Length: 208
Image (cartoon, rainbow, N blue to C red; front, side, top):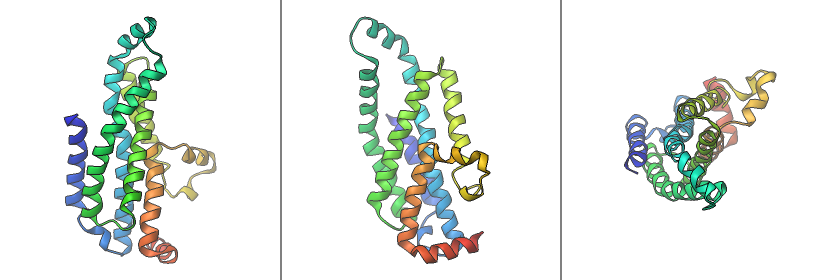
């Protein structure tokens, strides 16, 4: 548990000291920086979920034996693991959200920010469970999960605008990992409330 709380607080401290108060600035560069840090926050959810892979992989022989004995079904096992992680996630996501939201002075609704971060983390947990269940070994799962998440980052709209993605790759931008989708929802809510649709559009054009 210490490691799962520690990585969130470590990242929160880095974000707080690096982006302190930047949300109060309404120039184009600051808006771009806020967009980048939101992209990072929600992409980090999927990478953090990789910490769950070893425990699931190591418990696989026990799961097979107890399933053979008729103790429970695989669905029951994974649901119990998910609930266990979800309960812990309520506290870790809340601590992280409080630290970064008010230190960076993000605009908009804190409840919206925390809710999307929490839900994104839950989806990331399911993603990690899926790779841990499908991969033949722990090493393969640890390789496939970050590889999949990293490829998603190329299509999230930060490195290249979604409208500029080649037609042959447009479909991939709609099956992205939870971090990228969470960033799209949260950044839109925060920035539109702060500036209004017209002003935000003008400033993003200037930033390009």
